Amino acid sequence: MPNATPLLAVEGLSARYGKVEALHPTDLSVARGELVAVLGPNGAGKSTLLRAIMGLTPGAGTVRFDGALLPRDDARSVAARGVILVPEGRGIFGPMTVRDNLDLGAYMLGRQHGEIAARMERVFTLFPRLKNRQSQIAGSMSGGEQQMLAIGRALMAGPKLLLLDEPSLGLAPRLAAEILETLGGLNRAGLGILLVEQRAPLALKLATRAYLLAVGRVVAEVTPDQIASPHDLARYYFAAA
Amino acid sequence: MTSPAITSPRPDFLRPGVLLPWLAGVGLLAYVFIAGGYLVTVLSFAAIYAVFVTGLNFFMGYTGQVSFGQNAFAAIGGYTSAILTTKGWPVFAAMPVGIVAAALLALAIGYPTLRLRGHYLAMATLALGLIVQEIAVQWDSVTQGYTGISGIPGLGAFGWELPNDRAQLAALLVALGLCIWISSRLKHSRLGHALAAIAGSEDAARALGIDVARYKLLAFVIAAVYAAFSGSLFVHFVGFVSPEVFGLHMVVLGFTMLYVGGIGTVFGPLIGAFIISLLPETFRGFKDYQDLAYGAALIALLIYAPKGLASLARFLPGRKPGEGA
Image 1 (tube, one colour):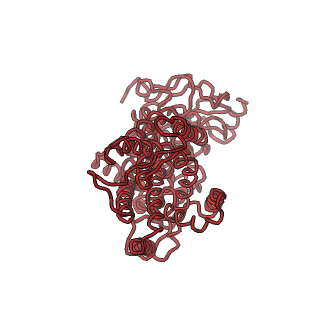
Image 2 (cartoon, helix red, strand yellow):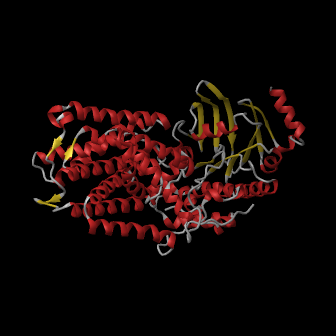
Image 3 (tube, one colour):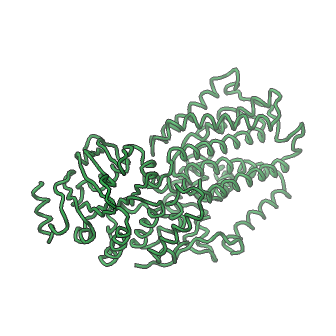
């Protein structure tokens, strides 16, 4: 599938909270079928980057998806184009059931019940545990199950590009690895993924490329084989500071 | 890694935890209808307030927003009914006019203010309530100021009025039942799920393609329609209206009922309205301090039972935890 236009092309994207610029002008891209990781310590601006791409946080710069400009202040139409965010802290709807959460993921489908059911079946194949817990109140599930639900809900929206904000956060290592492996499978099936992670080794196993973010700017773009040990990462971060 | 299965089945009306409160309620109503007298009036006010609070629940419970200004819409419904019917309009012609007027005002006010969040929205709506009340006081030629409008006809249609208090209460209960049924249907609809998503996280809802601004506005308008309907019912039931009727007191009372009954539940407004309406008989000794007593009760409840009395049903036998009404 050689196609010169990247799936996602970000140019000079910055974002601010009030007077503070949390993300300085940043360039990055995701090619079709690529899984790109964004690594960096706490407060590096990783979440802000994803929120800015979605148009949830105001800022400047351009974001192109499939060659077309995305609006900077309208997350709804960004989502409608197929860019779906699994937000920081999962953002599942705690008081609602698993099934209702998944239904909301397919909100943009309206009343196409057949397609919604088909997508839900695919999510259940991916995360069989969710199938057993369809009528459970989402907030009462374990962290890992909630993360599966958050990803499942995003998949219900039929993403062409999935933005993930620290899906392994707060999870036991084995479970984190399991969830990231599932993401790797989705990517191998052709889904473009931009993955923000603090657990660099896990992310680097799956990613084709990685951007290192520190204090609100991209300090390096690397391939996984350039980062052989945590020391290599530290070298990049400290070189930036 | 796995967690206990806490499920949310549809309410099973045969379980004692569900059945007992309903039996108690029906028993109370039967007693009131047979015994008549003052309690009929008290329960009628409770039914009217339950309509108001069911609307408030739409905006505050289902959608997770805050409005201190719903009394404004009740005032518009009430005054429109009062003014038109005393000029000879039939009740069922005047009522929709007030409701439509309130809905239009909610659209006009909601469009700019619903961009505000949290306490900014609360302040804006509070101002709305105060402004409408001030208009009711000052626009003497139409509202007759503090004197108020009297001689408003009772509920009825086609030149026929409900003959007595009991018939009025029955009519109010039918209206309330309809309002709660609509609220329940909407809660479990696509709209209701979108509102719940907004209450959960506006950003998450937006990122799933939900039109947050539009749904917040819709919830605000629905709440205003309920408020206007209750305001109209109120003036026809009492036969009189003055600015104090729709004062800040109404907001405090509405909030108390909503939190006591159970915010975000279908039947919470009903439970709260009836319990708080029957309480004044208890609080009567406080006289001028009634609002203070309500406020104290509200704070105590927010601390000890933040989901209200409707949530306490789960402690009754036969009801599984984690279940919403």
